Image 1: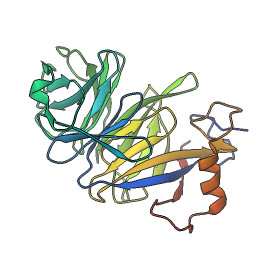
Image 2: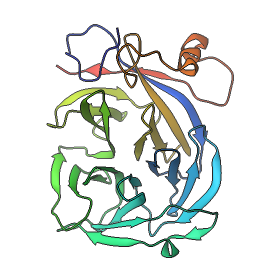
Image 3: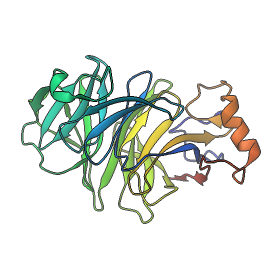
Image 4: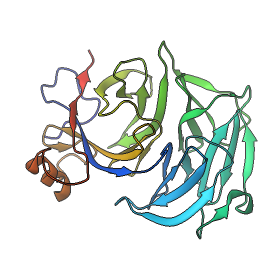
Length: 272
């Protein structure tokens, strides 16, 4: 039986973090998924299109600043944020285009924030964001509204991603309060439901393609494609669904198989 995220803590089945693939990318920081491809930004603010198979398409766009990245499906724009300013702009249609030629629009959050944004996501008309080793907030993606605190506490957070499993919504975050740091998921009420130790030093921005979670390992110069395994398969698959053959193949081959992809598992520590 597939164990859904957020199931009762008394469930005996383990939930494990599986790095399905890992792609070398220098300075990878921001991540977004546009419904077809991944967009990733580097520490120079340049944004690159990459397929979900980890191949850069050659389409690039120079963003306005170094920031986490999001995609607004309502207007089909890429989104960045800095100093309380939200900038939305078109994706590149050919290599080498600069964002100033791609119809950028900038709005502001009341109160603003001057630090580096490590986590950014858009869900409907809501912007989810997390400054560098700080708290997690949400605010109107259209700007003009004040920020609402979602998660606080000592140690801070980095990447943040809103996603839906079945009919239930969750917020995944990189929790910087732990050493080593952890990837945790929360209910919309802010209740922590479980955590897994990261398979590296830390992740920054996150993205979700509807099947896998993606994470930018800035210091490791790589982008990881992650699955979460429950009792019987991926928690990202609908109950009763059959996991993709590639996922099962990795589990059968084990983690000592040759290849360039990094394949590691970590077990969630269920909270009471």
